[in-house]
Length: 281
Image 1 (cartoon, rainbow, N blue to C red):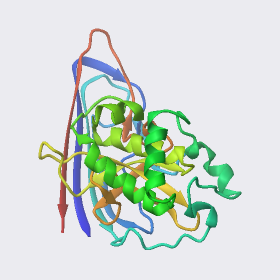
Image 2 (image 1 turned 45 degrees about the vertical axis):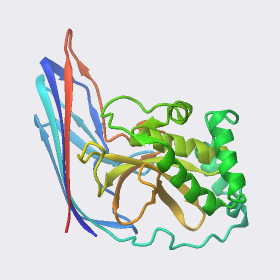
Image 3 (image 1 turned 60 degrees about the vertical axis):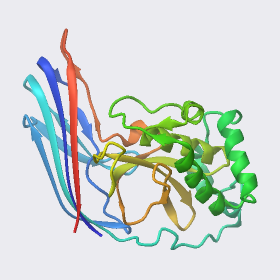
Image 4 (image 1 turned 180 degrees about the vertical axis):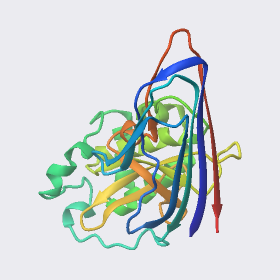
């Protein structure tokens, strides 16, 4: 599937401010699941400098910095991406340790994945919820992931919330509503209580939010030896394939954030506006 994506984020300040260096994670992946054909990044005001790098999580990132004060910052990303993975299940689990729950990774993967396997709470409502699904699916890892994805899709009402940190997994489970990032965090926490390495993923989905608009989307990825990170999107009830365009991922939602930075100024109000247009060709 070939996608043309235009994504604009604008910050407007009530008076001129000084901008700290900002970190951008906005370049879509270019790997075995998708090909980045074209990418354009336009920033206004023009930064005094920019350096591109690979961050701790392996994301393509850039740091930008400014010398002048400004009352507006606009970041425009135009991407052309071809997604290649039509079947999200085109892999085979060969390690007995990951076929059943709780998952037990072998070294050296176990050492590298340890942070991704640590739940916030080993006991409590989310762990009990995950255990119910694990028991119902016979502690089969792949059946658990599919059932968890579907159950959260049916259980949690999706709402649009453009700003703010994700809710805790327990809060989302209790309220039974949340933004895509909230549901992804709940999915991750449920997986981690069963020993499954899980991380937060950010990018685009060829669909629309409840309000009919398109936004930057969030889901989760889990790790299988010899298969890599595989995506599950509980807010849409889908295993991730060619309708998703991954951009960044991380141990925590903040480590996959598309734009991070701060501004300096006294008695300043700021407003963020975002626009995402995705066209499949």
